[in-house]
Image (cartoon, rainbow, N blue to C red; front, side):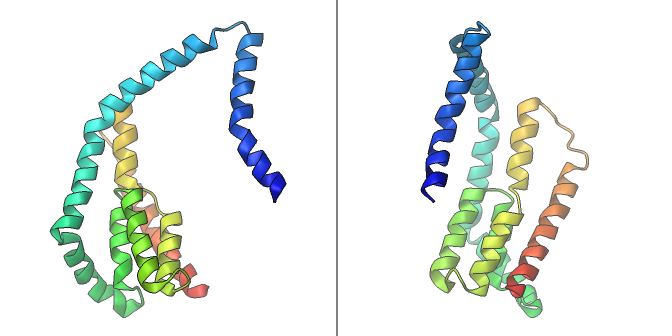
Length: 174
């Protein structure tokens, strides 16, 4: 295990030394290239910031207003009949917008039900098999200026639904 820890601690420094060494061997000015890349990265961050702030604010409003609890209770009433606990519903909804908020909800499930419970297993697997659909689409499409998403959202929602169903099946199999 100590070898794995050593390698994982050395990967990033070795990668940096490799890039700098390669730039020196090719007689490129790696510092200027780094500065140019950092400037472009900051421009991207500034252009995407309003979208990110809007998404974060929307998730905060959903959680604070009680709408998420109401929606979860409404959907959970029907999903409990097929074996899906109501406490999983907020994780599946919020996960499409924010990974960190969904992680907080998952930790709440762990505290209440335990990590090895059916609810804990479902939440864990859902966090691994789904993606932050709206965050990713808004971030990447906004950064490159794409306005027409065409079939991207539908495809991503189908994949997310498939991940949720697979998570539930796998949790029951465990």
